Amino acid sequence: MTIQIIVPELGESVIEATVRRWLKEEGDFVEAGEALVELETDKVNLEVGAKASGVLAKINAGEGQDVKVGDSLGTINENAKQPASQPATSPIPAAAEIVPASEKEPTTTQSQAPLVTPVAARFAREQSVDPTQVSGTGPEGRVTKSDVERFVQQQNVVAREETKTLAPPLPTAIVELTARREERERMSRRRRTIAQRLLEASQSTAMLTTFNEVDVSAMMDLRRRRNEAFQARYGVKLGVTSFFVKASVSALKAFPRLNAEIQGDEILLKYYYDVGVAVGSEEGLVVPVIRDTDRLSFAQIEKQIKEFSVKTNQGALTVEDLRGGTFTVTNGGVFGSLLSTPILNQPQVGILGLHKVEERPIVINGQIVARPMMYLALSYDHRIVDGREAVQFLVHIKELIEDPERLLLEG
Image 1 (tube, helix red, strand yellow):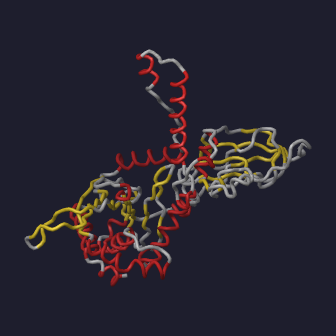
Image 2 (cartoon, helix red, strand yellow):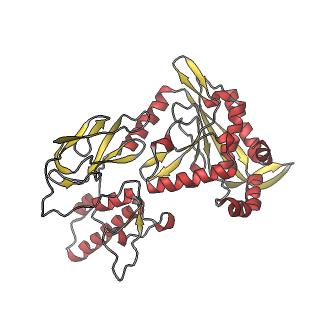
Image 3 (tube, one colour):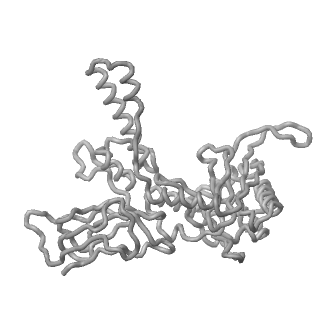
């Protein structure tokens, strides 16, 4: 009996995927439940397993090919038996798992293999690199794709130096020519989707950005005074983002058009507050959503942010984590950004950009003093949000951050 390998449901509003790689080849015997192929969507990566044991008879969709829900990826011949010469295989770990960098048993000189993210593991295999030789800089020493890239670059430098030592010097003109190195890589589906949506946002919205600056002295002082007790009680640090998420919810209640979306010639006002928090990952920016933030405490928000950060590093975010969202907060300051213009995350009509805290001279009561200052940026869709509303929205956030006790009272 021939069994079709079908592209499964990929989640809300996701109808297409790209075949990232096949884990089996035509003619391989597979066990029921064993992972066959990895699909890449704009939100998450997932693996499709075998519904029955048999031989992978045919691959219909090759690596890099785009497929839709319901398409046939290939077929399994259920009647075929496992060849005696082919040992039983254990399922390949899912993309969402963190796996040991070494697939072999630890030796006496290596009692425990380091952990490697799934993206880094795939990249290491593509580059023929043993991840156990790579120093990890991720959480708990995990090896990331950036670590592998750095290792490959270092190996290339060493190889070039050895070549220079062994080979006679080349003519100057040839040396200059060979130094012009280029590399071509296929855009991931997530990167393609990010590019498409950012382009659509700039072309289909009347996007405008307004700026302000906020004195974060009081907020930083509160964090210093309360962080130790907060961490001891809740198991997470009292971060910066939770203050701005809370302040954003208060501002959204005061200016509801920034918590809306345009549907045709109608405005859909939303009176629930699902705030997306942008997180950088190895494959591009993702925006997991904290739901019903108006009902959550600072501790609950911080725990959600920490959980999303861990899941992003592990490649374990689900479609549900990324679904929906009524407003977005993005913090470019963690990467050192002093000022930027965030782009709308459609169909949302507002996004708040946070930036690097930097001591600057300001005038208070006629005196020049140094204060920790942060630039804020609010991008909004001018089709339904007026400039006056946007400015007042940002001033509302500024006032709450400069007097954070009000946030605690409102919470």
